[in-house]
Image (cartoon, rainbow, N blue to C red):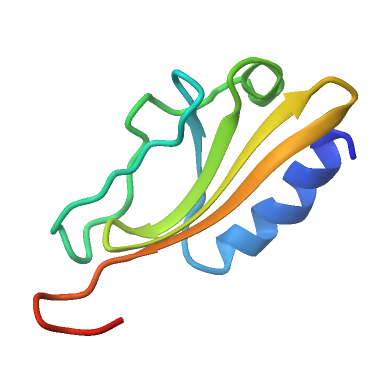
Length: 99
């Protein structure tokens, strides 16, 4: 499936959890942004992608929303005639609390 269709499908899905950041991917891995910052909004560790097409044809893009302790991410990268994508939910509990 071409990346524009994957991007167009998942962007509104991620938006259900808050404002969506279009983050650049560096080094072929997603940015963790993990920590004990609770309700602080998630951030782009490698900067925001201003050119979506260039980012997707390069190392990829992360669609991120939520807080640092409750993140929703989709990592998308163009791969040949198809698209590689990964869905992630990162949730931290407080010490002694089960998730």
